[in-house]
Length: 222
Image (cartoon, rainbow, N blue to C red; front, side, top):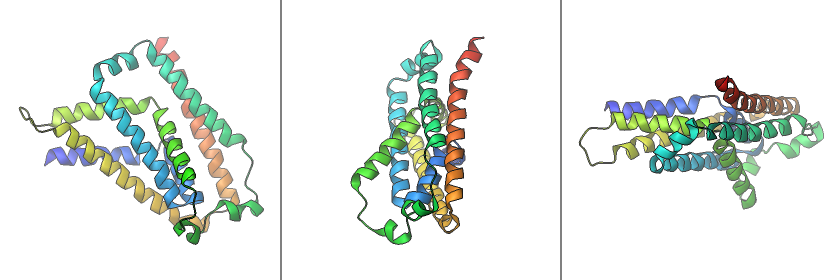
């Protein structure tokens, strides 16, 4: 039973961490609706699964990469992606009152089936790239899998590590869905000023996080 509680606990902790993607998920749910936010979150989930597969198949190689000379490259590339996205949000055109009605989707739009499938694919790809660009993700999945291996019963052929990771992912995604639904409740309070402020906040968070990823590599070298 402790095994399952640990898996649920890790999934919960990962889901309540306020990272850069959290703000994008919130903004997408408010401005584009539940389905769009789910598409973004599915992209994040897929990138997590890809990292998990890498971590399980190439665990030795990944540990050497993220702790060796390539760690700096990963940090700089990931940081640059975050900074570019952050600057884009800071400099993009502000939403005017006239554009507000077109930007914020009402309930009838959310429930309609007229949304272009390409938009969902784009949002999924956006979620995938933003999460995959964060090199810290591979670190916490390596940690999760290490904990799963330690928590698994000894001398058992049952794939306990797979079960542990599956529970973590389901818990993580389930709580993300609750976040999306909660953000939807904020829609009546949304104003152009709030959306512009949220975009600025996203820009600042992503830029600072990207700067942190780049600088930490040089600080560790000193």
